[in-house]
Image 1 (tube, rainbow over the protein chains, first blue to last red):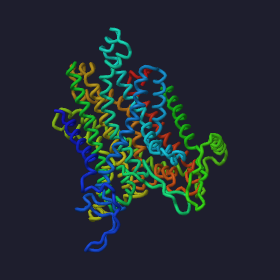
Image 2 (cartoon, each protein chain N blue to C red):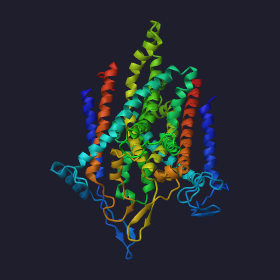
Image 3 (cartoon, rainbow over the protein chains, first blue to last red):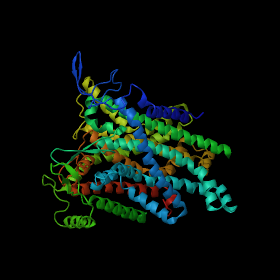
Image 4 (cartoon, rainbow over the protein chains, first blue to last red):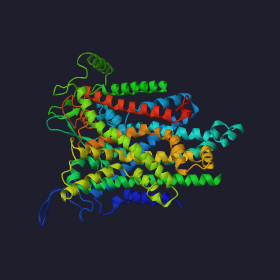
Length: 296
Length: 314
């Protein structure tokens, strides 16, 4: 039995239920209300509220229910991850598969990887995201997604290129060449079946990695989305306006001391999601491997 | 091998220049406000001429006595950056060495217990270590320490800022956590790849002890493949350094690098987005040189470990 696939799949279903059904449960505050001070029998309570029956996971400093934030933010989070990884793999497929057919692309890929081997991803993103035309661009979310996607394109392309090179050395491919397949048929019928396994498993693993990277950025204060608030005396203030999970970590320094539930819930859901992707990727890899061996 | 090292240096020059070009992009704005003083637009347009001027100015200053410039306490920025880098090196180098050796030991353990009951301790813990984000562990431990402090069980630990031994130890642990598991997986994979090889069968046939085969034959040849992962490991540690130094307020290179590059939250004046180029260049230089050195060490180790690689492509 493929345990990782079964567990991973169950966890994914739960995650998707939370994402798409969750916001419609009456307990969840879909509009994310900011609650100020609350009068109780014991006196006045100010946010952050600790976990209670009203706030199952407590509230953050602005009096927003953490559980609702996580549920409402799930859709946006998953969408951003999907966008990052989809862009990354679209570019990586062109580079990785292209490198097998064209020596120019191969050289480009090698150079790309060597140059990026000198740049830690956080480093690169900090450099790019500080540029004025990106900060003030209307499409800065897109720029951010694009930058994170591009940072690791080389790595993914290298994996794909490695896989296609490996397959090309197998004797059944030689047989295909000898029997006169066109390059196109050769690719679709011979390469693709083995190539889609690393493609799918790495795609899923990368969604977990991208989420982790976003969390790292949030901790050090680099955000995916923000809007500008005009200041009275001129100029603007950048304000985070997204419900994406990592944005809940923006106050981690204070929260770790006095509102631990905010940090624990956020890091917890991120860990849960990363494990889901990891299990799914492992499970799918095993599943394909077994299926492939059975055919042989 | 000399050619390969030269090539590495060449790529480093290229990567560093690219970062420099990014850094010297003009950042001064011409903020437009309306009659009541409210923000209308940043009034920023990119101009290649200004960019080019910036680059020229940077190099003339670098060559003159000014060098990279002074910080606000009138100390040379290069010295400041190097001092902060040394603090970070106290975390980075031990973390790299520790995670490398512990990782290999763990990988060997995982491999030798892969079919036994101890698998739960071996392969399964490695899997868990790779799929749980280390941020989770860091946050949990940090809270745990605070809890112990509040309850009066373990008191007197200094877990924030720079200057205590315990913060260095704890940070080294945080930094080496994920890379150790990563290297364990790489070692396990390398050993698995060696397993079916003919020379292993010959060694077994000759009746050499299992222990000897594992350490002398398989590990020695497998190590060359493990060294292929050192760059990923170094990049991960450096990225994570930002998180760890920020979380524990450890005043090291990553902490100050972030401070110097941080885009202002409040954009009021025209130079709100201007960064301290000298400082950032100094830090970037040290960080990338660190990566270069680790790549060179890894390259040398690979050439020494894998006889087939001599004269062959790595």
